[in-house]
Image 1 (tube, rainbow, N blue to C red):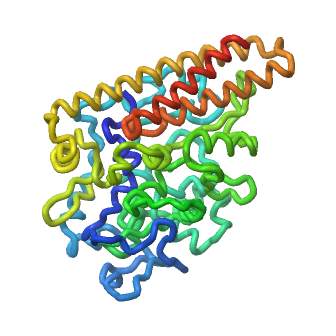
Image 2: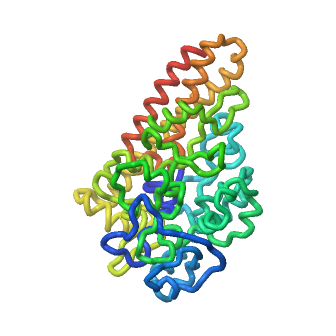
Image 3: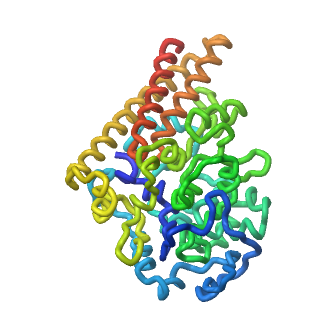
Amino acid sequence: MKKLKLFIPLFVICGMLIFIVACSQPDKPASSGSEGANTSEPTEQVGAESAQNEEVDNSKIIPAKEWADAHPKEYETFMMNKDISLDYPGAPETRDYLTTYPALETIYKGSKYDIEYTVPRTHYYTLDTVINTARPKATAACLNCKTADYMIAEQNMGEALYTADFMEVASTFTNDITCYDCHGNQPGVINVLRSSFNRAMDKFDMQVDDKVLACGQCHNEYYFSEETGEVVHPYVYGSDPDSVLKYYNEINHVDFVQPDTGIGLIKVQHPEYETFTNNSPHFLAGLSCVDCHMSHQQEYTSHYWTTPFKDTSILKGTCLKCHSSSEEQELVDTVNQMQADSNARVTKISEELEQLTLTIAQNKANYDADTWAQISSKYRDAQFYWDFVFVENSDGFHNSQHAKDCFDKSEALIAELKDLV
């Protein structure tokens, strides 16, 4: 199986997101979905007591450990994110996607994901992971969602940060994903602070719970601006796959060129936000990432971000409240089957794309201009729709109909390609 199961997104969609519900969650979050807390010149870190002032200073990061005395249970559960074990129902058998899906080495060749692609180690290790990955890093903009320090550096450096040397900047950072990412220095208040995401959200007249936005600010699809190097979200026409693809094709955006075919492709990132908010049943029911990835205790919300398969109190506290006619094991079995079906289609389509890649590469010198234009366009779009589901980190669970629609579109394009190549 691919990513962490069920709501795998805890790793992903909930990821940073999970921090969202922070220590003491108020009835109504203080920040709006499209506006982050005000930030300005950062320097050294400060003590937790400063955040008790009426005016909260978000220009410095208060480390998680400094909140331990005031919010012991939240801190204790946050430290549980050190756990990277895969000991739960439906967990992947290996952390290496390239082993699980051999076709990726052909499809992703030229993207850097053919070098290394593994199951994430939890948000506790984000900075360490991005620094030590075997994939080469482009610029400091790659750190945008890997560390709270990025937001402070952006205040200090402005646009110069986006194209700065990755290692030079990363060597000055010390925080992974921490309280600041979702709360600033204000426990209990959700502050969506990523500037790139806030700019994208400003264009939408769409009501989204701040608890979803806190996670969505990093669990989304994006690309790097050719002009400034900053993170940009492709929501000009909407955030659904069709709208994103329309925009990318309109500007002829290319993330990497497949060396064997010469086709310029889009490398989708981790579109949990786009998948969840585009009419998924749980989004329409008013649930947030937090409801499914952070267990709610009587006096606090756990800050251990995980799959309900690993923390069964989430199954009891969230899932079975609505799915009251189901037994716990029945629910687990249903989700596992849903994800198994999705992964079967992921594998099947990846193998078809791999074979098409080899065929196109072998015959590309024989195609006339019109045929080549059709082949390259259809292949690009087929790979995009497949990738949109594959990299989304829930194995189709977050929005099963959405996943099926993307698979159907990819397979229809593949069928047309087979008649052309």
